[in-house]
Image (cartoon, rainbow, N blue to C red; front, top):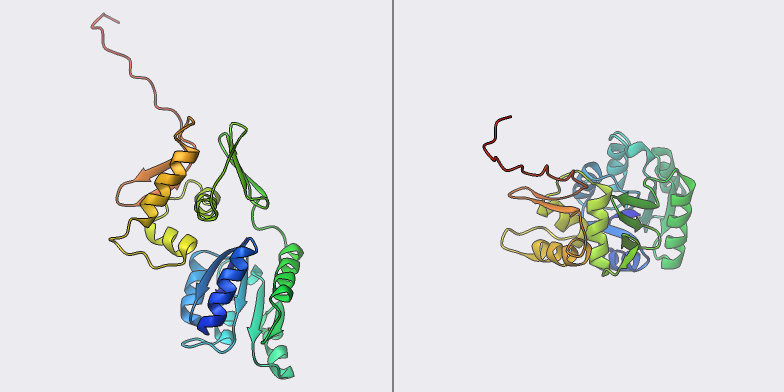
Length: 239
């Protein structure tokens, strides 16, 4: 499950990013409301943890705009804020927030509320993703091909999960960097290419057909492609 945290306080944002990732979620972090809204509009998350007091756009403005986006009306939102006045809670709920947690908070309570909201709505993706002979158990974080278990690191699983759930879609290095590593892609870094090579060595090299493909100058795509037609040599014999 993919969670977007929109929080400008550095320590709180980093704490949530690390803690939610360790709890098994795929987490992205935005440091201001404008960036958070942009991230929500380009890749709709399964849930948003949203601070109210944000620079550039506050949480109220982000929530109003989010509910107008395609698919944005269905995204659960938890307000996480130091403002505990009744009118603030009422305002957030009237704007479409699903829950409201006041700082300081117990992290275990936040995780419990997140899991409750995610169970409440319809699942946003299959628990198991299959592409060809590859099977990804999203909840158990297990991957296999041809029935053989493939052991991946947390980042490798995150990379594969991103490619698989958007199978057939070419993902640029910048999208992969922001979604899996939560960093801005720099043209001189090879972190994405190196990660793809490691993933291929486990997922593709021992098996046929190959599932991860490179489109030069564009990015990477995960899909099952039809085998190329065999080349029939021309013998020169009359038809």
